[in-house]
Length: 432
Image (cartoon, rainbow, N blue to C red; front, side):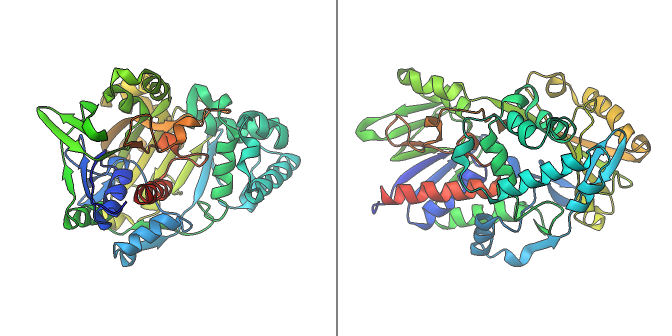
């Protein structure tokens, strides 16, 4: 595609910003529409104790090729810190280390045969390169058959329920394959992870600067109300009283949101988009006087605790970065109609404190402040045998393209994969 195009991009998260950066670098004129007053989406940051901090926890694996390439291209490689991580699991009112095969061997609630089958199955998934053989299978059934029912009940069922809730039994085995296969070379606790010295805000700011420098635009507080196919195969985007005309439009928002703004004439496509199911996330940031745990990442295996994980930022980044306060994320995936998602902040904190007290009985005395963020489209549900039409960049509307977390398959959603797919879409457009 040689001529310079005006391109509208819906959504100012990492996908939208990456698309705008590479398109503007290639001589096109992208305009990013962000509904909020700040860009970044799920990697967006806030000020906590004098430093920027992500609203939703993030780190970079050493194997995140596309993220690291983008960081190098932006001139930020020297701003990355390589930091040691650690994993624990909380089960039956006690936290156990879980960063190595030796930790698995010492874990008292799986017998030797369980551990052998689990280890053998993990090695098989790490070495298997053909995810297609798993696409009609359910992860829960595969794990029970190959790793054992006890391994499913003790180790994996709580993690699946913590991630997918009522859908946990029906998640595609191809998704589980990707989790094991893609993390084999970059396991939390198995090597150092990478974190931007001044948070992901450095990446957001540099992308924004480059887009503007390349004559692209970012429009804040602009929620798209209508997408209207126009004359000569162009597309109009309506924001309030403003109407913008584009050669191409790229949507990075969740399919159900895209469904709300496209014309009723595309009824089948609207229905397909609206049927993509997501689960929400509640990210609670605790500011503490002392540390809560001894680990960066603690998976919660006790079923009477509602949330899935504790990520202690200051067991990763030194507390002095946050004026010697200790920063902890509580990660809780939950449906948007659950009692946790709809609860106000005070009610939600009271619910969490009951569980946190089991992990550290001093929680009430060391807690200084709490910040709570909720995102309704945090995790698409990847069912076995899902329809693959939704994975395509092209849509039935001429010159409208889509790229969302629901299209990242079989890998789980994440910054590295979002950047990879954004580059693919840019290359597709450039060749068109």
